[in-house]
Image (tube, rainbow, N blue to C red; front, side, top):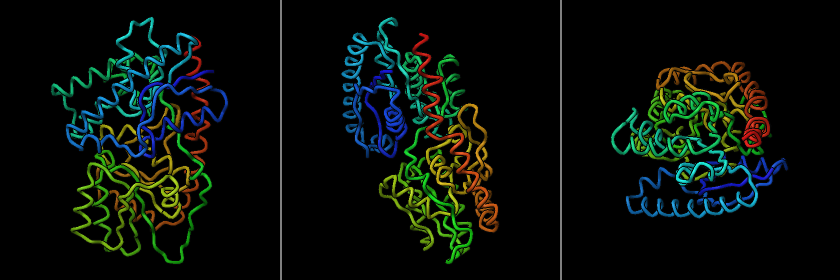
Length: 385
């Protein structure tokens, strides 16, 4: 089946789902993928653009809007010659808004990678509560109109599916939740963690963008609570809008067992960090967005076969069981510190979680599941239209 790719897309380590999805579809030879859009630089992060000032944001928006307009022209011309579905990677909002301006009969069959709601990220996640001021309401209406122009909207979890349906007025039959696609070649070969280590140091790893969703203050408080226990070596990998909190923590406490890798890390470097870790930390941001996601880093942790601690509030793709992770109370540093101690003291339980993680990923979150969803759930919708 031919598959066009439309819009201006985000890629790189920060937004890998679309690139990994397209690589998977190409490799399986079931889809003839034709790129009619363009990729933004791999090192671009939306949060850094937003913090760069109004002029930088204006130039970025002009570039994205013009690029999406050109892409839509290419897509419409291609669909006129040979009808085919159009995959619109994240952020699909801009391309789909232009599609929504077309008469319904002339609209291409768009499969939107919704990934993360722009409105949700800008206003509810950043402010910690739902905001419905003028700008927030305008963004919400624009996103709703854009998503309604798509034939299929892809999200990553059941909770996100519910949120998209309720927040943007989408029909339930057009929203599908399926696993994210990861480049698993660096993670699947990672062997089991040593049950008894010669240096007896227990490495606790956090990987992720420093945003409210991850509960950065909770993570730092847990490190502080365990700072007197010399068994632990804490490693933080990532940067983001809350980097100031980590900077202040490092300056105030100056803990020798706390290492922060702020620079950009390749997927191979991240895999190496996970391979050397005994315990991996997930999401601790509490309710709202943090409770609706199963982030990329958990996919990586599970694929590598590592013991994972994350908050009890989380969601998974449709028809997927709860993952084998140790859960803690949401947004609670004491609960997180207790869980780290539990895994440190119980080597057998830690190894059991690690073994179950690898099996769970292979059965429920692997790229085979992603490809199956495209073949069995997404492609038939175009054939039936």
